[in-house]
Length: 481
Image (cartoon, rainbow, N blue to C red; front, side, top):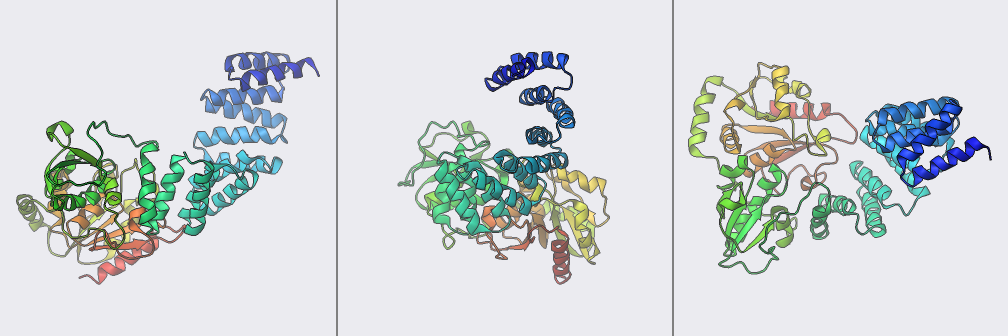
């Protein structure tokens, strides 16, 4: 063994032990002796990557690859750095090169699957994860990722098999339990899905509330006060507050914590005694329950979903105020539009639509379109002005204002967002545009929702754009007048 090889081996030992500074010092000394030492450059790339200096890592790996173009590990390192910087095409090229050089490397195929998933190449992602699993059949995360992709491709039986295997391999992998829950619920298997859904509390992004009172276990509530805690998105709160009436029917006094923008509206739900956005404002209670756990407590199945609508009501004074505003807008079918959801939602890239994609709707004569869009996506209306899109959103301060406007509309067209839930809870017609692999609550294939009887679905097909869906909506609008 040469002295240079011995030095590099020592650097590797430091790197493997997490002593990055020592490893870096040795590698830089080696490069002073031999500036074309590809292994020293590779190790420095590994060190830079672990330290979070991703561009430096990519530069070092690229230099090493020029010197040693047939070493797969170098391209694997380069691919990882590019992937973590979000430069997916470059990452894919590096990993494809690595796969040719080291075809039996589990990490190469797994990360290539991740890249394909993030760039929407779902079939390629499935194939890559399958190659990874063939090399590492006991790897639970790879099976979770494959199961997720198979779900997105609509191959539900295969997805369930992979997800169940992931849970068997790692019973504490909370994300696997959650995706399993979503697939079970999406396919209508509520009996198995609701218990799995409780694993959400062990997933990143879910925080168990600091509430000292005991959790309601489904026992007798007669004469007791229960707090319903809004735990997830605005749409979830609207969907699950319907259970307040069932609790009141059991003799409970029902309190609800909800986001401030929802408080006036949630107060109209049957069975709700009091609601506020802060727990301290609600007074004492005996037990509490997260809202999304209510279907489990009630043993909800497809036949027993509480679907009496409307269960939310618009304020009459606000409805009257909107009547005055809309009188000057002219005649025609009044259609509300909401094209964007919360960008923080992990599936928002699939469910939201850019406003210009809805342009075919503007070709249908005799329609007045009203923007119901708030948040970041609302800026698209200002950047893409349309004389047919009437924007009164400056008068909307909370969901009660939106509800009052909706009462004047003939139909609302919305992507999967809280507005769709609101229209459904008000008992008004809503056409919801869904991605091919929708959120669990919308189930599969069916054109309607058991949660909201006035909701109608327009669904994408696998890996298609929104163009056909929008044309179909336009055709149906033409028949509404």
